[in-house]
Amino acid sequence: MLEYIKTILVKVSFDKKIFEKELKKAINNLLEEDLRDLKQWCYSQFYDVHPQVLQRCFVGS
Image (tube, rainbow, N blue to C red; front, side, top):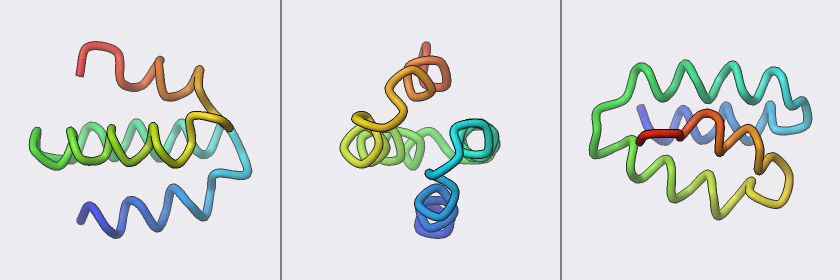
């Protein structure tokens, strides 16, 4: 599931609203262990493009 989510996020990363929507869905559907991996991956891949989105979505995780 995690690899599928990563694929989706890469494909929608051009649009901030869609990216945030998909990221929120992913956060709600993943187990805690996968969520930690997703957070690390997102920050390494998208921090330069969507820093505010990442901070909003990962608050408290």
